[in-house]
Image (cartoon, rainbow, N blue to C red; front, side, top):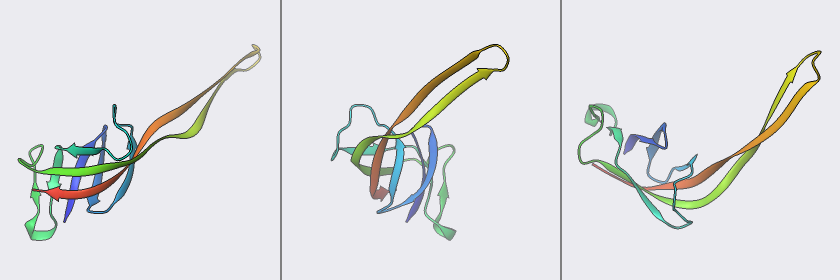
Amino acid sequence: MKAIIKTQGRQFTVSEGDILIVNRYPDTNSGDTVTIDSVLALGEGKDASIGTPTVEGASVTAKVLENKRGEKVRIFKKKRRHGYERRRGHRQELSVIKIESIKG
């Protein structure tokens, strides 16, 4: 069974056993279970049910495999002929989750 879920500001098409990298869930550690209630669509083919905006009573259970930080993004600003250069960096906080079950 497939589902379209919305979590951490992004939408994903998932099925059981999929591994996703999403923005970090606050206050979670490795091995914790997360329940995602915002299921936008559920099923496939003629058995599909599409929510308005979400499917009532549907949920997806995921397990947090690890929390990590993404690759460093470098920000460089420059104004030519003015001697202005600025360097900054950013690393996104991420969670790796595995979809365990889809209910609905």
